[in-house]
Image (cartoon, rainbow, N blue to C red; front, side, top):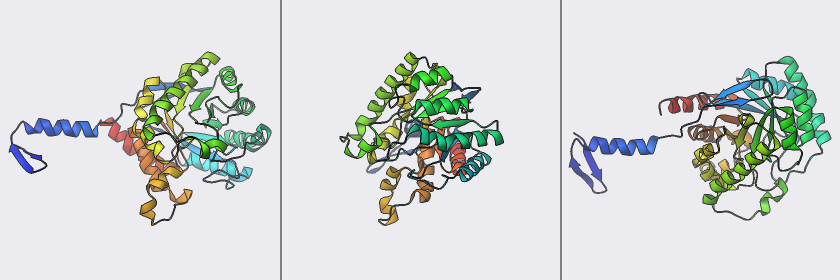
Length: 324
């Protein structure tokens, strides 16, 4: 026997109430079914979906929002990349240009000067490492893949360099196509959208990016999608995107989420910090909460600054999905 409550207190006691409460419980506690897939890279294939993969961020930049300048020197960058691998990162994402709001575009030659020596040194020390090159420059992508990068991670999804998609197709490597609304120098002046408009916009735009990638000759099993949290989406616009992340599974590609230390997380927790905005380095708990939600919503890969915490969050979320 079980008591059934309405807003005024217990209304009945009957065995059939068990089924009612179970139905309510199931409707509230179901999580996304994360599709299984194979992601074909330059020289290997990764199986996705049974276990969340963690991608460590390696920024060789003076002006990234979180750790700009910290790993600009080659020695420091190499050591940090190796540390991320030692901490358990499944992949490294190596970038030489910041795409924070109002960032100044960087010439491809300077980007290459920053990242190519670091890439070569890491692969010399760890030949088995899977390294992604974070760039929207086709020339940088080509040189990095020739130097051993397995993946090209383009924050513009191939929009900012007309040669990018054909280059990725020619290099036969993995491709991460991210959604970006506008460019960094435009983000503060973009027209505001209602939060509920964001999921359908991102889904439609990424569908178009995948169609153009296919037309350029990129095989479908080489593509991963990133909804681009914070890239042209402000504050509360990011939460409907996370809440409805499973909609992107309808496009038929695995999903990467890069939500680590993002500013919109601090806006949500502002009142908890008594008016103090946590610095990027102080956003570990916020990031862990968001990463856990992302996996439960169907993310295959987490792109993060803090690898150990992400591995723990992913392990718990994976266990929940396993019992879903």
